[in-house]
Image 1 (cartoon, helix red, strand yellow):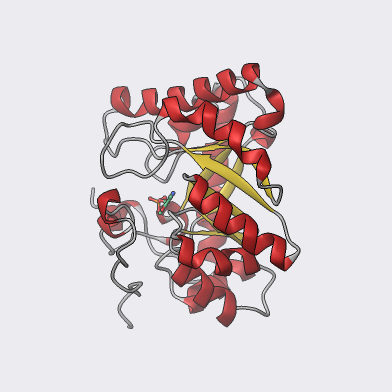
Image 2 (image 1 turned 45 degrees about the vertical axis):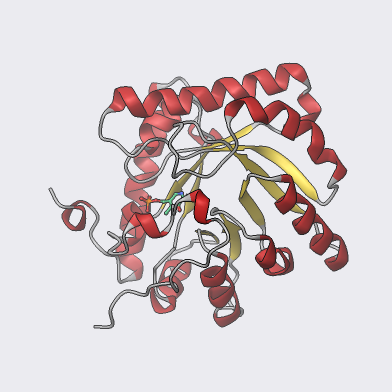
Length: 268
Ligand SMILES: *Cc1c(COP(=O)(O)O)cnc(C)c1O
């Protein structure tokens, strides 16, 4: 099955509502299978690459918090959709020169992976008189092209974060290895849970409520079985993306090189 067949594009309020209901019921079932309450899992719809016209329809279907990977795209949508009640969650790597934008409007930031970014974001937030929820991103797959701290860097990083008082640490975030092989994906999620547990034991004050943001369209049920409290789901709600994922997970060696402009779906 191609991803376009697996993830049909939602274009009407009814189609969005149907996709949401389908994902939500799979979340609930996965939670119950794991002996967890369905209420313990939050669904974060990810609207990256989705044109603003369709974001409006998603909001009409009841979505309130939306995830965006790229700050530039999020900032444009925030501006152009300012009259809608949307809370923006930034889930992709942040360059320090975009910290001001995130500080200005983001509700949460899920990809904190360096003290440089923490410092830049905190400075801008303090100036704006705001505070936001943050998740620390950990690279659990040991893949070169993934952002995030190495697992052994996490304890020291968490100890350093209280200095930045406008960042409210809520937990950890990760991307599993991209694979259909469950035996490779599951250990990434299990590792994040175990890092959270160790952090809690070391000092429960440093990890907030200990949330685990993990799981995407292809693997959120596995992630829930391994303890996810937030799943970030794009394609299964909005439809298959045509943009190659490489654009979202570039080589970290190229960190501060701007990636190509946000791509929009072709106009029909
Ligand atoms: C795009 C993205 C997702 C969602 O991926 P889908 O395959 O669309 O569900 C989740 N997390 C991050 C960081 C993303 O960039």
